[in-house]
Image (cartoon, rainbow, N blue to C red):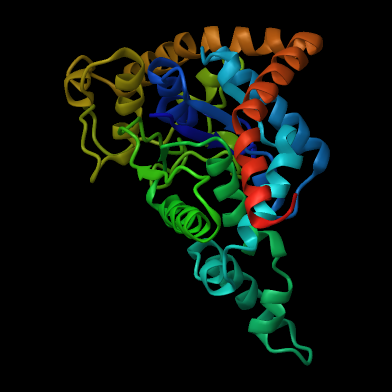
Length: 339
């Protein structure tokens, strides 16, 4: 049973990405599982091309440095031709109503519409908002379906925000198979095992995010040790004098204890009993995070410095992913009448 997981280069990989997903991929991934850097997904909203390219390379290096087999990692845009062809096939299988019902498109359209309402002019706010939304945001689910179906993935670990897209993928695969002939594996959306849910150090009510504008509360995987220590020492804590794990009333301290537990093992509540001051907790968390990230950071920076080696690994991963999916694309094109 093969799995497919991706990570979008919307920003630098952070501690939450690593503890919550990347580390698990490296430790638990099967021989047929694939992991990819979803750089094409990063183009549905305005972006800087040079930065996107740089972040994609960085994320590839981080995945490999984490211990994932290089043959099971690839960059999405290296399969752009194959994915472009299959996306078109799936767009010709999907209908507008299905795409327009996707929550992500509706939310982004609504946000643009709300912004446009105050702009004046002859066009109503909703129309102006939708006019400003990239078409790729509407068709993005077809690209995600192509990612999944090209590789023949049986399972797609996703959160609730992406489950709807996997359900659409299932519907398109079934429709194509019943209309034109059996080509695609019908994938299942599966909830990934619970990983560390790391919160922003300056605002523990929200998740740590790659795309945050204020990086003060985000520990990035490639931060230097001194940067990591400074950020953790400045982390928001809560009222009280004795460390306790109380997520509802002391989310800042709870976040630090949960990070410590993810790095060292044990339960956050038990770890809290080892300390008598908030400062001691912060020092312990900083030490644990620095040691957890040290080998990852060293390997990733070595890869990024060796351009030829990273290019070689990237090419090999792309070739394996392309070979794995080529017969499905050929069959789909033949059955739909394209060749």
